Image 1 (cartoon, rainbow, N blue to C red):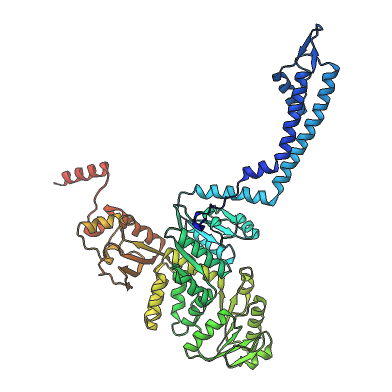
Image 2: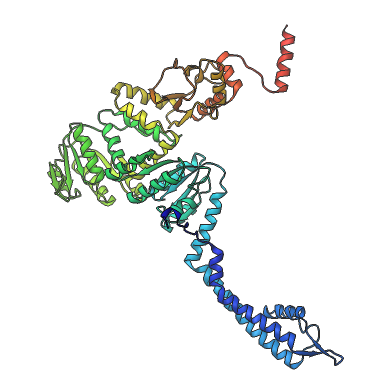
Length: 576
């Protein structure tokens, strides 16, 4: 038999499990009832008149039924003989014992972990099958997964979670989320688990592989690409090898948290305003914009040479900055190197803490990182301190630490994934922005700061198609020339501009960053925009409502509906 001809693995079902475990109790009850009913039918009785009679099958079944359940309606239809009463006594004890045995088996079955998992899996599968709106399949509910689920839910999108451990799922059930998020305890590497979670569901919008295991993320991405019918797949990768492997078979977005952290931090040195732009475009909408951070040049001390430390050291050397490594292992570490943990003052002095401009605490332990930050601040009060937060549970402690910048790996990872979900063009825009002169980046940062009055603006993308922008596409069909300046005006008063900025326009593979107001739109264009919540709603109204768009193009208010058209005609007749 070929592998492709092999039968599918059967999914766990509750009914066969119940029947298998309840086989002996049910057979015992059936046997007890059968024997009792047969005895009552065969044992002769006597009427009050002294005439002989035999109980028929219906009366025997009726009597045994209420006797076995200890209800006790009495002797029907006539008083029993001594032999019938002895048989009734045996029937009572045997059937009651059978019922106790059956109930005990049911209680034991309900407490069995395997049965409870099968019951929860069936309920989960039914819940997912009833979803009738787009949802994202999140594989892994650790620090990154929990942040992603909350952010997606707060944007009105549904999620489905697969997690191997029960603890995170218990935390999920206690989370105060805007939308209900079903969770399944299962291994997301198994195709059956992904299928139960809705991989082939018509409303599945994408798969997010955010486990802490690169092999598991690879398996999830492969399964989603092969069975997901063109679904978007975004995966996490901790090593360069895993990153290349995931990208080799077409994973839509592969995010290495260590490389993302290193790139963001290092880019802020030649372009200090880049941090402000990045925070404005990847932060939580309507939250206050964080204070701008300007990492200095000069000597950097890097405590910890893990994946993040290695990536950051490479970026700093590419910028021509002197970098001193502090690590407990000397093998394979670049020079200059100081052997130690960095938590001791003498180790930091040996690394040149007094003359250094910045220090990064990036060991694998949060307690060591916090200790390094406090020791470094005591040794050099003016040094720029960066702390790498490993565990989300230590957020409050890091906020109290004497650091100028805290890098939370899970939060940066969640923000990167979320930005690719709501705005797939954002990575291309940030890549373009890195090549721009500092003055241009500073001007954009200031523009974004004013856009939403000092709060994080909303980021979204729009594709000019008949489905997403029906009014605009109808105007294209009439041959109308539509410029950005016309579109970015208020449909209530076209003299007012919306608090909205077009960051990027994609047209047939070509990209145009920060296009001017005279840019002419075309069908099929994909736009990356940011702005206030009000501006987003007004723009969507212009794109979808024919009368609102006609007003922007001509300046004339066209009434819609029978009543408004009648009133407009009546007003026109009076004015003649």
